Length: 169
Image 1 (cartoon, rainbow, N blue to C red):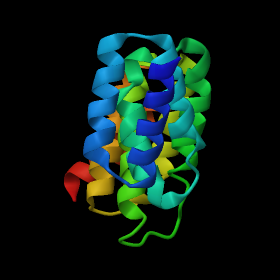
Image 2: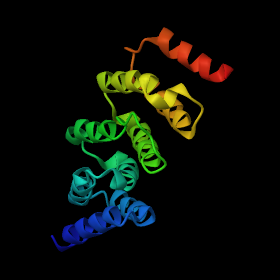
Image 3: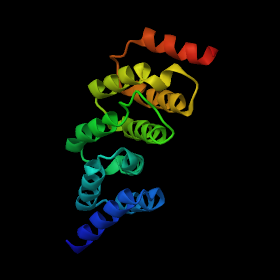
């Protein structure tokens, strides 16, 4: 119980302080311990962070925890990450957080169901990042690559057209 409390405080302060290095070390510790209580409390703090400025650290923390997230939490985690990529207006302040959310989805891809992976692919090819050359588009491409083996229900023609278009630019 004491250790779980300590983990919770470490997760909270790393997210609130936007200390991504501490969040990474915390996730590595949680994964190494393979303690469901540690993973649950860390994930609870990450998912509880709703401010855009904290999304970057939370998304990286979630991505690092991907292998210890329980199956019953995957849908909630995916919803949190996809909620973080919904911005249409990008500034230098929120673009990195959106990129981190896409990275979190990519790292979670191996845990997604066919429906979830298909949904991610559909959202990715329509996301504003996919319209221009940017680091965001690179993250979209990597996310698509990670999700494609986990779904058979993607419009492959649309996906191929988009990717060929990117390659020709």
